[in-house]
Image: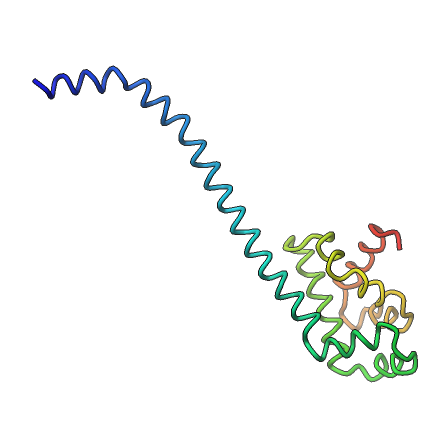
Length: 155
């Protein structure tokens, strides 16, 4: 007897249960999407922090950065002429940023927020800019990144 009552009750509230399911599914999907987006942003923040640390904390890059940031022009000429690994590593860091941008992993705005000053330094030094422009050196993504930054920044 109680079973029949239960079946009738379920049958009576079935439209309400279906409506609740229809309403709950998009809410759950939206919640899952928000959770996913939050985790993606967190993961991106972690590797952006790693990029920051590599650029600003690695001694080899610091020395090259300091030299290119107002160092002696003769030393800069020597650096470009001799092409030590510290110099090419420095440029390869920015080439990697260009790759990340091309692959849609980092926006131009993010690149500019973190590295605009140093990208402009590369462009402002004629010898360094000529070195990067030399197609045989293989810095196509860096060249493109510098061009895009210049267009956006108007510099």
